[in-house]
Length: 265
Image (tube, rainbow, N blue to C red; front, side):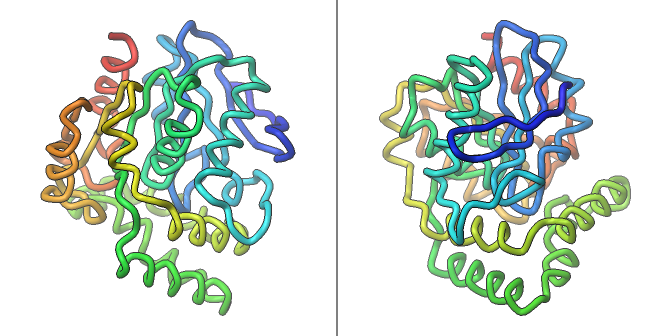
């Protein structure tokens, strides 16, 4: 993987690119993560496909652009990155928040999507309760209490029985929260809270779709995930039986195989 900075439109992006492969997979991380969350997942993919990972603006060391990073802005930025890299089409894989970006990209730039993968993500808009939770998190960050997010969010992403085994990953994610710019966290929280429902768009889209869901996800329950799968029979759905929200870390081989089966079909 070649680590570098590129310009995506007027936004400076930190990326890694394997630079080889007829088919390209773009991995978009979730909220309070960065592109290095994929570090041990990439080797399961790069021998068969080109892999690009990106620090989404607001996280990692990519540029923060203003007080609100809408999912549409992020989608346009990822598309501009594909232009810079000379990639005409890619499979857009979005984990959690990254899935919201993938959905916006599918809506705005469907010709650039060879397929989209929602990994522990959903086309639903925020509920009123979820939106209020984001507002509370913004208030915490503005009050200088970001450490409260670090104490709870990373561990909650893993199934209870996996937390001891994967303690080093949780520690890395805690450190990532501390290193993430306050302004970037606020901008992404604001953007997620205002995103629209994209269920109807997804049902009408001709872009191939895959859902990869954990049966023990504390953020997207099995019941909610099943309703999502039932509402989108046009999409393939793969369940990871022993995973929470971080299936690509909890069951990496099964997750990678599901992704490659989708890409190579």
